[in-house]
Amino acid sequence: MLRYFAIIVVFCSCSITLPKQFVEKAAQRTKGSDFYAQALQMQWKQRDSFAVERVLLGEIPPFLRKLKKIDVSIIDSSSGKLVKATYFVTADYISVGTKKDWARIPLTPIAGQKIADSFNCFLPTKKMVDDIYKAAKVKLTPVPMYIYRDSSITMWQHHLIIEGQRKQRKGLIAGIKKDVVISGKISRSDKPNRVAIYGWHLPNGKPIQPLYTGHVNWYADYSHGIRLVYRKIKVNGKWMDYTDVLKHPILHKLICNEEYCDFYRY
Image (cartoon, rainbow, N blue to C red; front, top):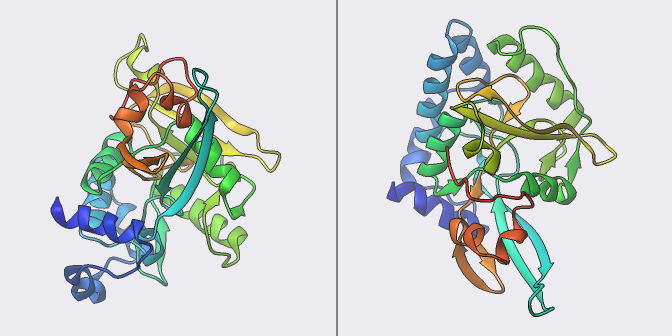
């Protein structure tokens, strides 16, 4: 656990220096194309486990290691003062591979939470997804696919389509996936074990996917993405844990715009 916390400290200082153990393993990393070649023979649970294993070994593309800054603000209704906050997110969705051969991997919220915990992160809220889209340097038009939505081959094909759209552009990217999010609708659903998804913004800024909790929490398809958010948020210059921000009667509005903001993790 400590080694992953060290990685996040490196992220937030805007340094790309990697821990020694990851540099030593670089030549042995699973490539993105190899991941999907193996995943073709797997059921969803095996694919999930395989992805988590690779990610926790540090087999992610280097650009994911440098988190991007998102600035937000609100007016404190009790004082009328401006409250500013900054949080840090991955530039893209969880991926496996090397600098030259990597691939985005849709995951269940359970797998996504395991990765988030290991990297001292959490999954975004609906509001954060909107704010990330606004801040994105690379905004791409969503590309829906309609058959074999939860198959590995469709996930791989969708990744390749996105890369064709991206055309080597770099920076915070959005508009390419629906985000797996934390939401108060999860704990209030009349059905157990749900996943909340939201986003996939069109060029006009409107999301294709409204906040939705209709899928069970073991479901993931090609359109889903796991974006990590560092769990410490700087509010008016002071670091706060995201759970404390969400619990605060005023400050929660910085990162959550739902009626209930009390669901913190899967």
